[in-house]
Image (cartoon, rainbow, N blue to C red; front, side, top):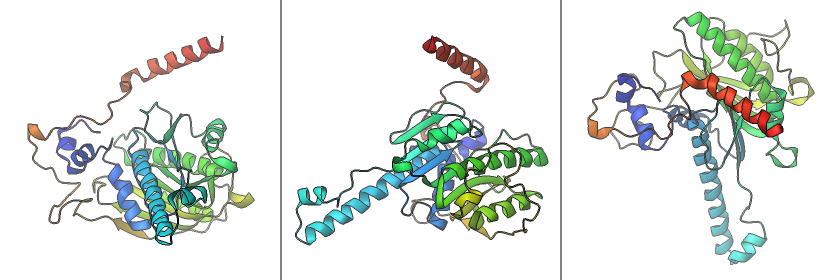
Amino acid sequence: MGKLSRDKRDVFYRRAKEKGYRARSAFKLLQLDSEFGLFENVTRAVDLCAAPGSWSQVLTDKLMGKQQQNEQEKLNTSLKEGGDLEDAKQGGTISERHPTIVAVDLQPMAPIDGVLCIQGDITSYETAQAILEPFENNERAQLVVCDGAPDVTGLHDLDEYLQSQLLIAAIKITTHVLVDGGTFVAKIFRGRHAGQLYAQLKMLFERVSIAKPTSSRNSSLESFVVCQNFRGGEKFRNLPLDGDTVLESDNIAPHIPPFFACGDLSGWGEESGIVMDADKSYPMDEKDFVAPVAPPIYQPHLAQEYQEKLKTKDTTQKQ
């Protein structure tokens, strides 16, 4: 989470800590789900560029909670029909299989219960294979999300380019791990060249939409692309992970996706009348301070030293 005084006065920043989320971005995924129903019938999900893990936390809460709710409904129905609890378990009314959630990031991430964390590069075939290993019976993920973004420079054209390259990498590895008919959600910086990405995404997915959650500041370039019903097949599955474009083709029709504003100013699960505005600073008393949910594993300026220690450790173990 942010360190600026503006961030500390930001209502979503503070509410995220109060609710146990590692970052305010958790509300963005919640608001996207409220508009598109992203978690409906999903039991296998992948979170790319996951650190610090707020989106993985939302996936855990939603998928685990939905499974428990569905199983309770099935159990209640079985018992109403005169069934027995043990018979319901043996007959498969109560599932023993939990949702599978995989989080991937180049940086180490503090563990989350119910989430398999993989430290890897999303431009690597080894990472794509590692993502698929936890899924049973050669299954693939039904939902892939990516909230990754480069360190912004303030130069909009450069930031848009860097973000587009990260998004392209996320799209390509998604073609390796997403089931046909699956959903892909990722951050995008809307700019004058974003139309090229929209057109290529429309080739891969039947429906492509752009959404801006109210928890995302208006001053930010970010929006989120929501791609539904992955076409897959031999043509669009397992695309090469190298290159700086999604599809190598000159015959891609332009596409203007619909735009959605997600969420409202009433907050998320707040009392009626309480307004949560991402662009407004709210007064804060010292008593309102809440400690970070998950402090960083290491300081950013020590990243190179940390990576060297990991390499040394791996070399020692191999010997």
